[in-house]
Image (cartoon, rainbow, N blue to C red; front, side, top):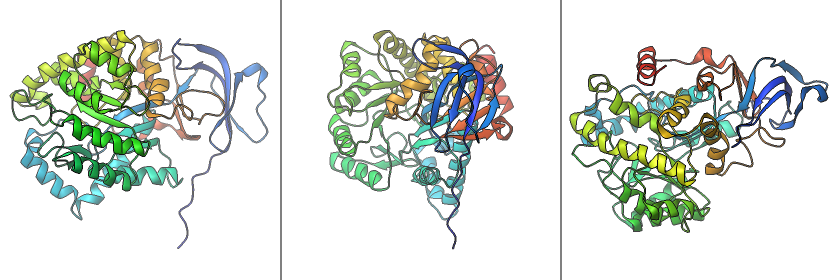
Length: 451
């Protein structure tokens, strides 16, 4: 049997581009050329007038176009496409039925195909690095390995495998391994690592989408000791840990345990702000916030008849979302690292909608477009520990690039339809042509958020 052919990179140069660097200052450079070698790395970034194109390199004329670093999405699920979730399937019984199918001989190929489709959609929409946070099994690990082996072109991936939850906790049983105590929590962490994950996720509190009682969303579910066992086991292998946390107490417990990223968030106090900035139990001595406005705000802003959420879920959302928004503003003002993650696959969060998270951070989170773009590139790269590889357009970095029709610092919607995506040196031509979009959902979100 012949080996699977590896994808090949042909060296090229993008010339005469306006370069949006994505740095904290919002630096924009005119008439620049970026040279990319056959190893997929950036060889040179310099003014076009003083940059000859090497022999044998394809030249792409980007006159009138903008080039920026590829987007990074640090909170992705791959099992769905963002259409409203049937409330009956969000119950424990419904999740058990879905889990039984997903792990059946018929379900496993379906989940694998859905994961691949979701990842390719993320890529074609401009995401060149992503982290999954809650997979049905190890389908994301397998897909990541195929990309890394050069079998298929795709984004750089950190794959979590199933998240870790208490019995009947958030995400259980569909996308979770069950942790009744600290010993089981450590054992399940090591099980995930043995399967090759390079990210871990904890359900520290209840969530909105599967809440069955008032107050369940945000209620603490895992103890500090359980989460410390997870963090210690993961950190021993250099793996960062994320925690779904939607209350002040849930965030507190997760930070004390040493998680590296808080997903969603809540109202912060002085102790929590200090723990974000200086967390002795985190892998790198600090923790970051990933606010996921895309998954939170539409649950309140869209009519319930459209969102499909139950009365209980709506009431839970009112409390949780208000805390998330306030916590985001507090984190921004305190200088906490804030990253960009969409919670893709959740209700009204399509795989192609990463640009909307930046827009919501500006419209509802107090960020400037410069800050939002910086968060989605360089800050996210730092959060994931890949800042030496990606997140900026610098010689020696991997060529993860977007070519746009205009400047996203002037209009973030320029990100919605990239003209060219380059992932690890591989150009994806006409990326927008093969994205399956949901016109009714997009029209609704445009109306809700003034487009």
